[in-house]
Image 1 (tube, one colour):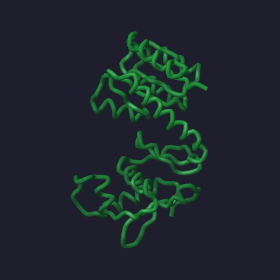
Image 2 (cartoon, helix red, strand yellow):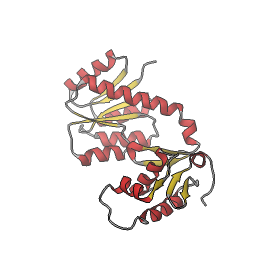
Image 3 (cartoon, helix red, strand yellow):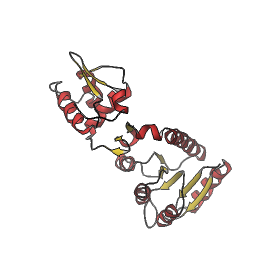
Image 4 (cartoon, rainbow, N blue to C red):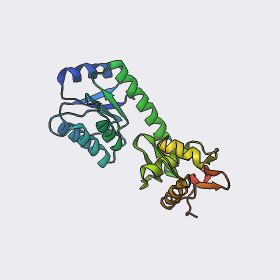
Length: 231
């Protein structure tokens, strides 16, 4: 079965060329020339992937992306734009965009990005039931979830959890965690990590961060999959 793609782009020539490449690659493409039209289509149909231009008449790409998330859609999203500034890219990822592609873009490169996102989405969908049973991270958006619910972590708390989560069999010293989170920018007592761990533990519904006395901290993958209270 062909993947269903919503392609929202206000420039007719770009829309026509990229749509043709997508269709030749086997995608089932629905076009939209305005953001409002894209939102209407999203309310009526299900799509596997949306490729959204940011600057469009009416609702812009960010508003369309918000609508996708508000509808609770599982649609993957690639933002397609000529805006290269860091602030715009961070905004896109904060709204849970899966990728950000700068125009002008090679059709072949865009197709490869689409293929990569859809392959990852397929893996995520297959593992969705397992992820909802415990703790999971959405690294592109710097968010952590427990049983599908987003946890209210600060950026520092998220980065700390991410470092431990990625290597559950490794014990990290406080110095290693500081270097990972703050790079070379932090000057001060390494016990600041203890304070962040304490705050993080209060927000985690499971006891998944172990203290290794005399060394530092380690992620307990077994606790991360099971329900339970925090010590």
